[in-house]
Amino acid sequence: MPRSDPEHHTRRGEVEFRTAGGAPMPWAWEHPAGTADTARRGPRARRPLAAALLAALCRQLADDDERVAYWVRQVRIGILLCQIGGWAVLGYGLWTETPARHSLVVLLTAGVVVLGSPCLMLLPLPRMMRDSRGPLLFYGWSVAVTAPTVIVARIDGGGTSPVLALLFVTLAFVSFAYPPAGVLAVGGLVSATYGLVIALPDGSLGGLFTVVIMIAFTAVCALASANSWAAHDRQALLIRTHATLAGTDPLTGVPNRRPFLQRLRAATEQARGSSPAVVCLVDLDGFKGVNDREGHAAGDAVLQAVTAALAYSVRETDTVARLGGDEFAVLAEVSPSMPAEVLAERLRDAVAAAGRASGVTASVGLAQVRAGDDVHDLLYRADAAMYRAKTAGGNRVTALV
Image (cartoon, rainbow, N blue to C red; front, side, top):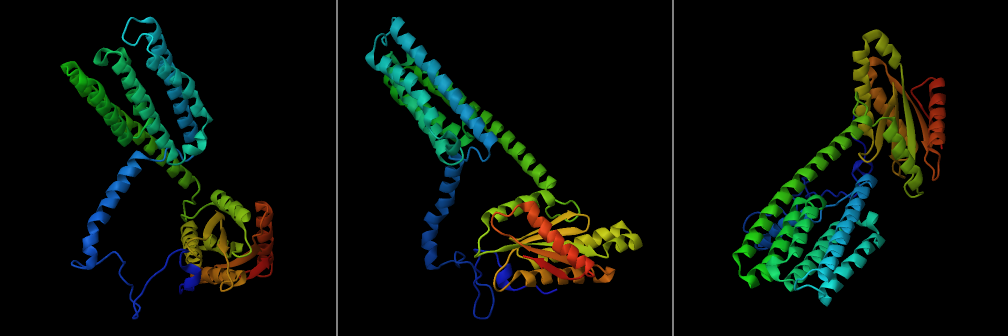
């Protein structure tokens, strides 16, 4: 059966360039060696590396409500840790005999942390966790915690200050709140800040030892983060696979009733006069006789052939679904060059060609998708049209627009 016209079948947004003789042209970036483009390959070659690094650092944290709730909980945990650390530093600065005792900078810094950290809950966290603002929030938060911690420790005597323990709390939080690349980035920042502000000015071997321990702790945290994200990715893949299988007809490989109804609902919400859509219910004529005469294996082969024929007759952006038994549904956009009646006749012809050897044809019911349509009413109209076609003798198209 010949493929239908290019306008109806070329994917939207795709353009194919051909030479005057009709042969496909090579892609614009595939130049032979020695052309002028060679000089520009260096910067272009570095772009994928930069993009990969950026993607690893600013990985999307959430794409569903459950994952968003998880990251909002992480923010709450981080605020709780800031509160504990801030109050601990306040108490330390007020009641211990150390260089930080009654230091105005130490007390003000702790006060800002205590009063300021809850303000993070005023941000639009659910929306931020769905885009690049989520990772940037955590990275900025790490810098905002690391800097005052090191400053307070410097005031309190440098490498001997117990305030530096808060840096390890920060790294521990990072291990389950950041992707592995982010853990390494923040751990490197914390280690470098400690080394430059505390270890080098003190010039002690203890400070250098602490830097080494921080680097090792960062590596452990990165491994923990990698395991956590890998487990999440496996779980997400399992869920997606399960959802795909649950929404796919196992015999024909096309969507079943549930995803078709979801797409139909979306089509009714997005219906526009400039790009109308139609629903075609396709019920096979004479299919029961195939099962009775030749067995269910032959019937399954007919169903698979009909599915392939229907899919071949519409665009890849349209939907072919098996609703059950020998009943199929097609949701497709139509255009002046491909009106609804012509599309429905094309589906009928496709089934007749696929089922010619078995004497199978199709009764097709056609209904126009209108904005605000109730999905079940729309299917009822298409089903009524299909029933009229079948009672009129089958192998024909009836429309209820």
